[in-house]
Length: 537
Image 1: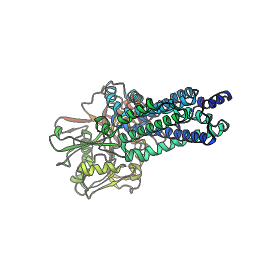
Image 2: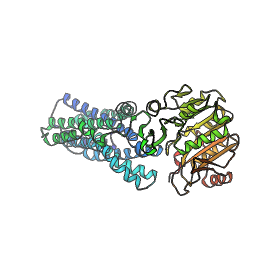
Image 3: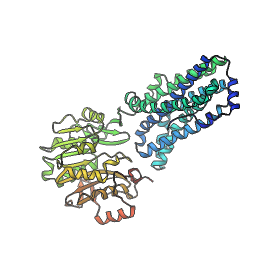
Image 4: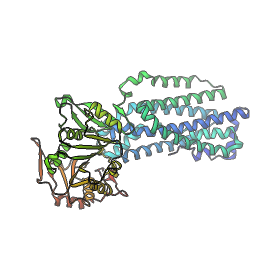
């Protein structure tokens, strides 16, 4: 993904170089070196900004589309397509007289600034209609990503070949070294932009301010080029200056107060866009929901720690209480993922003598759960801020009665938390009669991923059960399943939750036929195509 000068911009015949050199105003060696230094710095900065926008793009679309292999694939492909066309266009511009080519780069950077800032508004205009159109996950992701980030990538792809050509024209005797320097500057800038976006911009500024800052950087580079071109050719700065001032006015802090420039997130952590929404009106009591990116991860009721609102959570609790002595009193439980900490909070407050360990990779999720989701600091609840697999591996063998898998994230689930190797780890950490339950979101009539998870579990557990809501619409596109891995079968084939909701266990014959028909596989660390299996057409 390194943004480098295109071959068209750097494949120069002797005649082309000589012609380009005659377009420059006479100047001394120091002046030529100064121009080359400026062009080199701008090449590095445009590459850095282009890659930074690519990284921020992933976080920007997460509240609408989630994060998965498909979203990152779309972002990378769209940005590279923009770079490619921009480089091609820049190669054509590079053949213009040098002062006109420099001004064209200034206009391209101005366009990059405007389109980058405009993406903050555009996503709110196009995301809803495109998602509602029902294209399917992959086409939806591609369409939205293209609408938002193709234009900024196109315009930032233009400068590199043009600036390389201008530097060669300024010092034609040093062509070979100039090419090497500019390729290196582009590669270094790409690395710098990636690191800054991933480790600094998103963590410290958030999505909105990061994109505004990058837009202002583009504006600064555009203004610099316009000024430099004026110095070299004594051309009027009025039109470009007016355009830059107008673009700055659009990015003033007052504009950031509008709804389009406000973040969707309560907190933007290094892992998620975290949002806490009030559910009190709809539930008739003081309640809140935690949303990670765009998927709700739990609803907590303030006055009732044991209140479980989400049906799949109620079902997980029912299975555990069915299989553990005393309904789970004195249990030792390990949670793969914390989220809103709904079930850990309930068990810590209601299961006498229990001890609950939660592996939650994001400390900000835990902080917000404690401060805004009423988790507090129960003495019998311990949190490990680490990857769940590493955290579970650090625990002694046979140290838990229950392991709960809840690291699901729409069409993305960490593959290493569902493989045969991870299941073997889970089994080793469960004592006799231990229970492993997890929720899986999949296609209602073609649950290839859920069946593959079950196939992986069957290699280590004598009993594996798939449960679903009895009202599941086989034609529906998404459904939540609860899968249980046990030492003995559940005593009943149906469990009623409340007065009007029943979950049924899939008969073994149905599971076997569906697994054969849909090609269920055993997931391994070497091969776990989670994104392809999760009901994506």
